Length: 112
Image 1 (cartoon, rainbow, N blue to C red):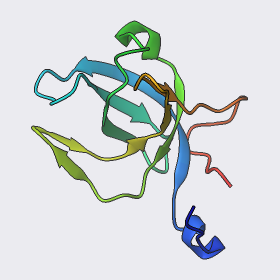
Image 2 (cartoon, helix red, strand yellow; image 1 turned 45 degrees about the horizontal axis):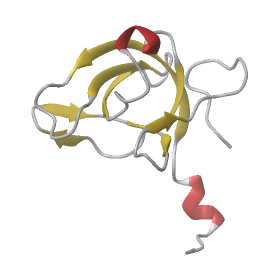
Image 3 (cartoon, rainbow, N blue to C red; image 1 turned 180 degrees about the vertical axis):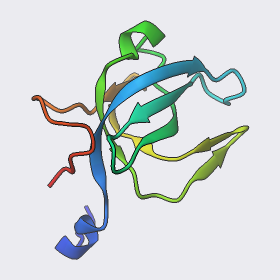
Image 4 (cartoon, helix red, strand yellow; image 1 turned 120 degrees about the vertical axis):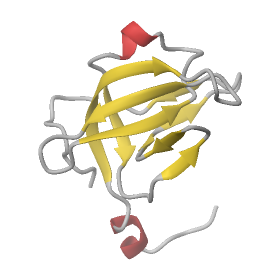
């Protein structure tokens, strides 16, 4: 495992957001959704492509709280400009389990 400095970690803006919209992403190479995530007043709503269709249906995701990186530069993924990276963990079968907060915190709060 490669180590990093504390100052490297401090550069990563991991924030809590709420998924407010989920759309199919038929142009994606692997099954994915297009998510709109609300990070509160300071950051606003950001779009993300997420390969999470194995474990989550669209209706299950609306209102779900997630942890995402919000300070990567936007990335073009097919016809979608992804503005944040929703985080999760890969299981052995390849499915992704979302990283979620374990308590009630407001949108936009930063992981420390």
